[in-house]
Length: 117
Image (cartoon, rainbow, N blue to C red):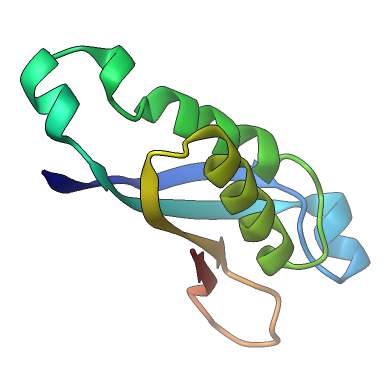
């Protein structure tokens, strides 16, 4: 029984960007996570030990988003590599990171990068 899980709208304040001001001032980032995994066992057992623990996914995102990077691609790649390592039962997943109000010289709600495996 294959299922999907999502964590949507995780909001963090961090310092990512190529401009010095972004590294000093920081910005808000919104992260969305999606995964496909076998849910047969947890659907029968009702046990957290048999499921992908959302709290552990959130903790990985929270830790990695706090490590400053120039590129959102770098942050997303780190998140995916850790999830792939720590959750071999995940068939595939994706992570999207949006930078709110990026400094592009005009009004832009957000810039967004999505990586998947």
